[in-house]
Image (cartoon, rainbow, N blue to C red; front, side, top):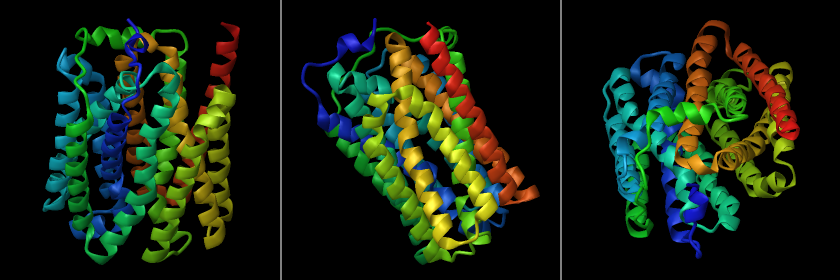
Length: 391
């Protein structure tokens, strides 16, 4: 049975906002290392590529968590599951803030990966149970607004706090934000019992649906290209643009506001042509990456291109989430799990392999790799659109 048939008559906007706050805390914590990479590496006595693995391990565990959460949680009340996942976010950030070594940081980030994968996997299905069908795109946009807000504020604020008070203070602040998210969810989320326990075999059945395998492969390359760029943006700005800490914070803020703009216009663009959005955005990002490699080094140009990247990224998650809910509406939780698992695999590839490329070949080569991945993603989206029209 499709979760669309369980949609309420009246929207529960408070619950939607509580989910958005939760994802704000999770995404902000997930990518804090990207804005604190240099400080973390120096304090922990490791290279920037090694410190970047704090993002990789979270994404890797998130991949597993997103696939297993529906099977492990069975018929448990989804409200309870979401609250427990938010508590894991709090605990992870506290442990990172006091971690004495990179190994301890990575262990703490495993907990964040469990929270990340599980929360994201249940998010789309939860939205479908909180608002009427006609309001689902708006609810998803508000939900992903949490990602936008995290991009706007988490990276530059983390960079600022790391510069003034130390990188550990930034993670302590992220723990406090997690506590706030937990309290709001406790007040606003309704009881949401699962009708049936999911089976692991359902994952493969969903992947075998028409267009799903090609869609997720395309999404993988697009997200890997993006996060290979974003995770190592600070080293690019420091080594190529030669920006100091204050300028880095300002450029990250520009990126964040670009993401906010993209999220704001996403519903409008998606309603016009989802297929065009899926194909053109990765092409745009590939061009931006190539321009940074070829012409990078001038602050105004680099900041402008980074802002354009933010605009495109603000649209990408909303567009792909919309595509997934429309492709497998009767298996929204499992489809959400596959979507999140693919996203986390992409992040692990972008951040993990990106760290190796940065350490061995330099940041410019890493951005060339990102451009290639994005071009492949654009081509895949074109094929996906053609396959859709032929069915």
